Length: 110
Image 1 (tube, one colour):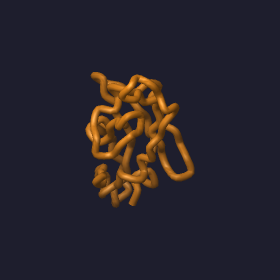
Image 2 (spheres, rainbow, N blue to C red; image 1 turned 45 degrees about the vertical axis):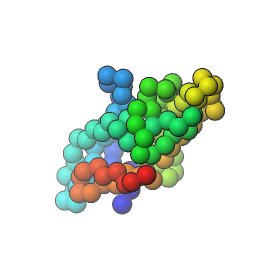
Image 3 (cartoon, rainbow, N blue to C red; image 1 turned 135 degrees about the horizontal axis):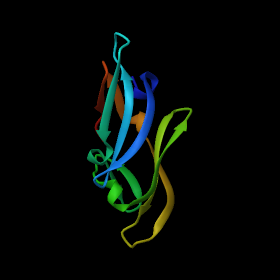
Image 4 (cartoon, helix red, strand yellow; image 1 turned 60 degrees about the horizontal axis):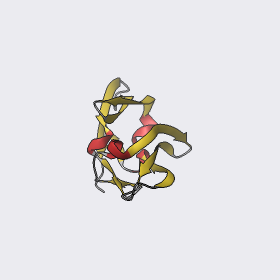
């Protein structure tokens, strides 16, 4: 199951040049757990596009934000291209690759 259906209080925080996702996640017994994950360990920037299985997107990102959509949370940012340009605002659906497994976040492969 995608994590956002059993999560609340999602927010982003910048820490040591990385982007963290903080949230409360419900386990199968209904208990809520505080969780945080460094998104830079799972998401990168490939010439101005987000990429799953990459890393350190924050290094080349500006205006990082979390957008709520009907399909779940979307990570958005302006990502720098190799030539220094920009493709404009980009987004990646976190709900596509993150699951809740009994109160723990699990990332699906790229």
